[in-house]
Length: 116
Ligand SMILES: Cc1cc2nc3c(=O)[nH]c(=O)nc-3n(C[C@H](O)[C@H](O)[C@H](O)COP(=O)(O)O)c2cc1C
Image 1 (cartoon, rainbow, N blue to C red):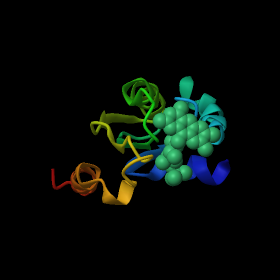
Image 2 (image 1 turned 45 degrees about the horizontal axis):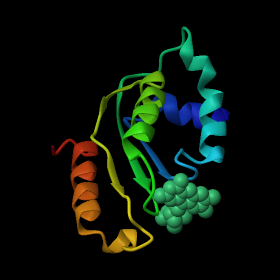
Image 3 (image 1 turned 180 degrees about the vertical axis):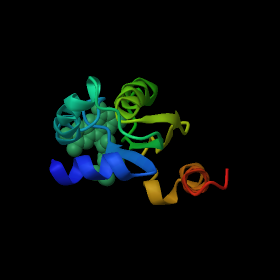
Image 4 (image 1 turned 45 degrees about the vertical axis):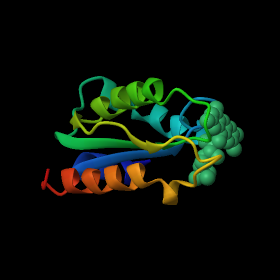
């Protein structure tokens, strides 16, 4: 975790990227985020930009998960958060063929690179 805390404290951008499992972020990612407890109190990492990429098979509520993810990002200093990006029907259309998702990922990259 010390390596990860260092990234959180020094990064300009933080991206949460996760497949949706059981209509939630993955358990492994939630385990990791549970270790951000130290930021819930007095230690405030520097302000940064945040974004969230989610993928799901076809039965999910991505806005609910986006909302939870924005809470996590805010706790670690990201107040400027890009709108949800994702591919939500991968049972039918693989993410790498989802043209809307690919377009939005490009916009997200521009946001992180100060071009948006
Ligand atoms: C354990 C597990 C739980 C899943 N739960 C959901 C779900 O609740 N809703 C949904 O739409 N897709 C669900 N999926 C499908 C994945 O979100 C989907 O296949 C996604 O594309 C996985 O990304 P990946 O191919 O990068 O692993 C689940 C997949 C797994 C393995």
